[in-house]
Length: 238
Image 1: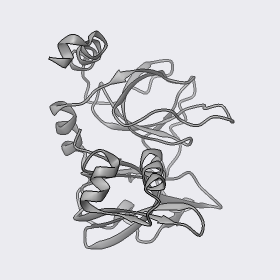
Image 2: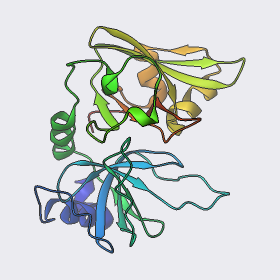
Image 3: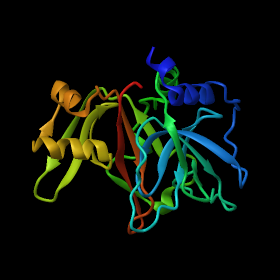
Image 4: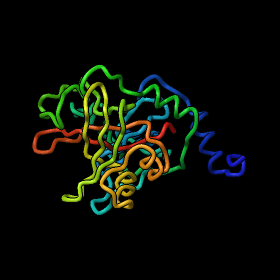
């Protein structure tokens, strides 16, 4: 009933569900692209490309004095730059946008759950193919993705280090106990608001407003020659 009463929500639903599909991501310069946001930082925004249903990272030219205002499950429209910069061997799924994308609305539901389930990273080895928090940039060959959507075996837990103000996500996956710096602004603000050092289980779900079913993890651009693992999103099923 709510969808029937909300023309904007109905328009987004029609846009997403009637979009033509393709088996490959279109990276033609100047192409209009549509994405469903999974996580967004000032460095890159991870989306499900709505034409191919593949994971893509958008490099967005945010102004130097501003931060991303995109949130999980936002539907956004952008235009690829004349140079999409597909030559980053550490981030092979990254493309560059010509300008700031346009937020069209939000989209959730069974289709999103299906897409997320299909995109979950299999637990067949260490996260991103290496153990530890980082790897030298020169070791990457463009053969491994820089995004992993994790269905955790244990957790996740959200932790706050008061000594330096950082927020961390801890979870178990593929037999490993993984700790990642958290860059999800909603999760960071959530634990800051509680003034607690740790959030887990029901307390975490209540504070976030949803039960986190997935951990969105990404590799950073090189920092002093190394690419670092981080958590850029805690996500519900949809």
